[in-house]
Image 1 (spheres, helix red, strand yellow):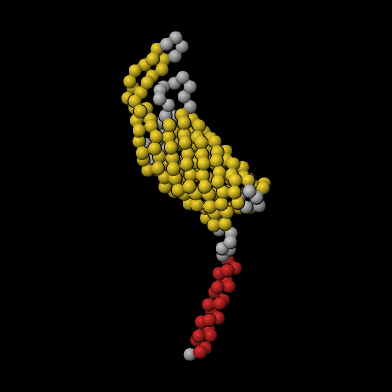
Image 2 (cartoon, helix red, strand yellow):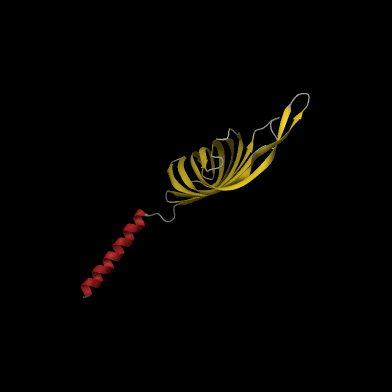
Length: 186
């Protein structure tokens, strides 16, 4: 009976040492990033996107919370300009090699904003014909997706580029953005 206890104790110690060699519990990274980019939607609306996010990496799994504000590029066009807000929580995989990080994420989010509704009237002046529309407010669930690459020449600062998409039934959108990150990136 004593030999079984000794054997169990040896197995327990051995499995703990193997686990500690494979899993690095101290390997984590975290950072805040912000960026500016361009978006395009299926409704033929396009414009600028402003991004901010919080990232946490444990092992090679990345957890991300993001907010995107999308403003339609509309110079002397229809009124009001369309505007959208995306909030999302994502999870994915991150690969790091020296000064380069590559990541792929997907998750769940919420898209809110307003589109142009029914046409109300048209302003005619000397130079422009501006159409005015009702605001069509909405909130819909969405699936945010993102892939990006970050160059980290300094341990606490990174510069990157990402491609992103937002799948929803109201206004699916895609875009790209340039990002600057500050935090523990390596």
